[in-house]
Amino acid sequence: MAVHIRLRRTGTTKKPAYRVVVADSRAARDGRFIEVIGHYNPLTNPPTLKIETEKASAWIKKGAQPSNTVKNLLARAGVKNG
Image (cartoon, rainbow, N blue to C red; front, side):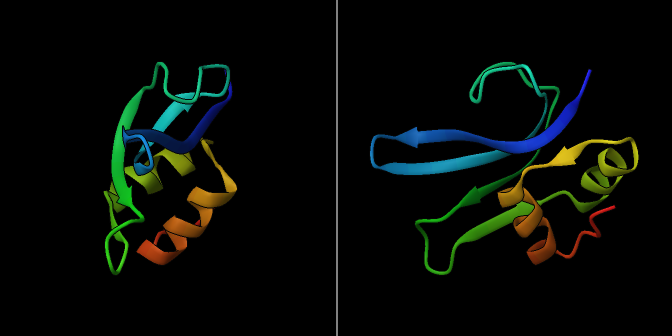
């Protein structure tokens, strides 16, 4: 089972907000997930980003692969990638 850290879209039409989740790579984008480790709202000024850094680091140490977007968000939040 490959585990990825990725964004899960929430919010309404044309007003997206995202949860940062740990999920099986085979699951649908907004489908089943293992754990929520943060949230991201690009519409606020400046964009709101809240990530539980300890949980993110623990999942990365266990082998979870962050998506490209999440990799950038983790860097912004101060989490070491790998």
